[in-house]
Amino acid sequence: MIRCRSLAGAGVVTAALVLATAALAATGSLTYRGCIANAGADGCEAPARDSFGNNLGLTVTPDGTAVYVGGFNGTLTRLTRDPVTGDLTFSDCFADGGRHRCRDVPHDSLDAASGVAVSPDGASVYVTSEEPTSAITRFRLTGTGRLGYRSCLANGGREAGRRSCDKPPRNSLESNEAIAIAPDGRSAYVVSSGSDSITWFNLKAGGKLRYRGCVANNAKLGCRALKSDALGGADALAVSPDGKSLYVAALRADAVMRFNRGPSGSLDPAGCLANFAAHGCRRPLQNSLSAANGVAVSPDGRSVYVSAMSGPTVNGGAGAISVFDRSADGSLTSRGCFADAGAHECAAPPLESLDAPASIALSPDGRSLYVGSYGREVSIFDRESALP
Image 1 (tube, rainbow, N blue to C red):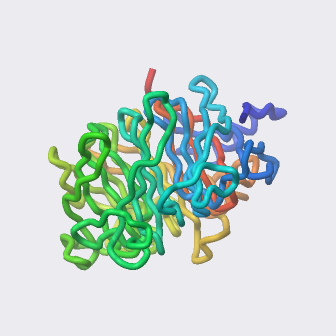
Image 2: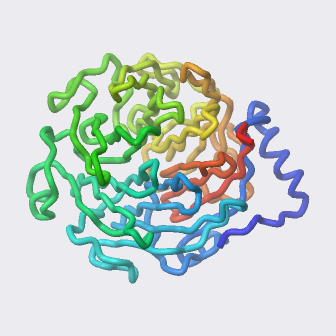
């Protein structure tokens, strides 16, 4: 379990973190809290089983009682969360082949697991996978509250056929990076870096996915075309609490792209931010979006956070967490960033656990932000929330 770190002069440390980038003050500001890592690496606390492995996917359940972490080593880890303190305790895990003493997955569809999402009712959990699997694996809570495997969906081809997953009408699920569920529970969206695309689904009874269509750079695979190429390496996405905006972090484009979301779930491009104002986008305060690969919107709808691995070496390096204000129309204003050792002119956390951050999520009350990293850590920040 992660407890609040008792740091000498904690107020001074927090003030330094906030004031190092003046715009990080007030609502939406973060205070580093702690971390959990395999075998207690980097001074973090250790889980009961070493099921973390390049933590690419991370999400908090709607009721705030659990955190799910998807590992690139073919795992899904469930952590119990204390709703009051935000502390985490290992609870359960799934793994291809039953590795790490976890429960087995029938079709080995968790290979290269990359993203995790939970339905608004908390009953369904979805995990995306990169190549060679390129699958979406669906889990569902049983009547006793225990999570169980249900099905998988993947592009046609040898790997999908071997796993006996269902297949979509178009092969737009090429190296799936992340999945997001709309607040109304009626739509799901998957970003795929191999096809530079977003695939759109309706959610049916029992959490089943129904394919609706896709948008992509250069109209790849018969998807609807975009005017900008800011979806290059589409790697993560998030839907705003009001359901009106969808944000995509694009790794190759070093960008975050915004879409307006219609009542039916349809998407329309609405601008972007990118390092050095590339792709016709606006530039953030710091060039802290290098290899952008995670995005989260606060429950109060007032902040957007983007994780970035930083640079061409995607398995290590001084990553960053960028902070944006979000306006009522969904547009973003850059406020600053965090990075190990103050890289990119960002504020520096007290422990260097932001080594190539790969996923980011907020608690339902908006007071805790979690960052999963390639370094097999989960970092915790306390957040000032506008919610009561």
